[in-house]
Length: 156
Image (cartoon, rainbow, N blue to C red; front, side):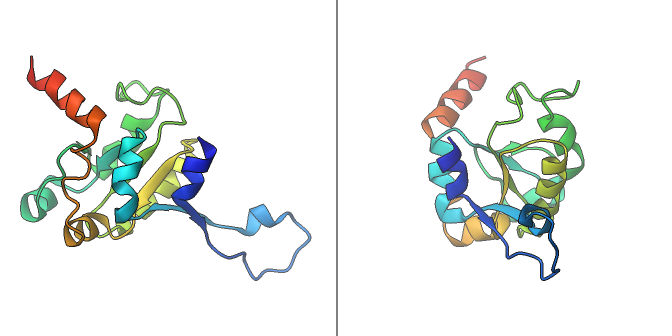
């Protein structure tokens, strides 16, 4: 499980500040998933969360198979101890991939979620724009477990 997380994680360089404190305190972890890694991440069970606004989705297009949750509500919905949590938010080790319009705003949300204790949250580099450019908009919906979820929901 840890190896899967590391495959979508990279860490920036250490801070130039000289000190005797442990290096970990001077590193900024930037978790990210690249568009070419999206299908594999979803296949292993990652949950994609589209944090674009309704207006952005209306203009740019939807991301089939992704949960659409506005950026201002995502922390409440993904917190497994919160009263407004999603049923999928079973613990702090659920793998979430956040998608914003261009990848910039999802990066900040990931930082906030890590501070909240969620351990496996990444942002999609380049956001929806990159998914569309790579012609991978259908990659989320093609995953077997997503297709099964859609079938269960639409059967009711």
